[in-house]
Image (cartoon, rainbow, N blue to C red):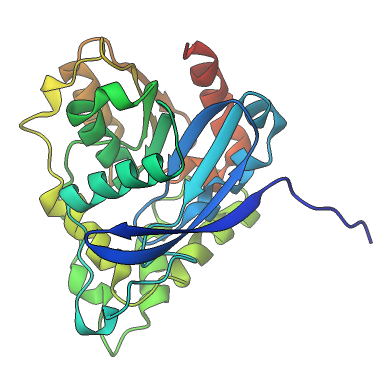
Length: 280
């Protein structure tokens, strides 16, 4: 049996968010330019495990991923049992900026996928001076509802399994079995109602169609990477966002789906490494 330790370090960050104490789990690996990674709805920072273990990335980048409150190892705040979790644009933006300040990140590269891809468009519009570059994975300005969210939080339905079932078709058909099922496992472990609460931002509050064209890439470079097999943030939606933002860079990744960094890390890194090399 071969025993080894991965270079990933995990810590808990205690800070106030939204006027309440929170305990947020943070992982990181590597040194150099900070690369802050934002996970998808209903999942957690484990989605960026492969990046944190790839020396081609960590040789020049300090890769950081945190579990949002209510996700992964970041428990909900005290009193959570008396409320319904519902993510808003203002909360999401404020959370990212507060955690950046707590970690003393000076103009990091920020990369987000799905809801993370949507919020980085908000950051590009509202806070471009805070970032060295912005990378949106599966970053659309909106999404048209295509399933009933009430199924995600019902007493007669297994929440984790139905969450994984809903997103299973978003994984690219060529994804290796091991990575496909690990991606789905993250969804099976989500807390009750958390995926549904994230989708409030994704499907309603975070719609940025009327403002996305105002993003100024002269203030902060914007890179958009989307998998061709994504029917949540379709290639057409990503291309429409790119056309509306002069100076943006867009790539449609062949063979990949909605979770490129976790469903097929090696294929995804073939697209990400040139982007990282292009960022000054």
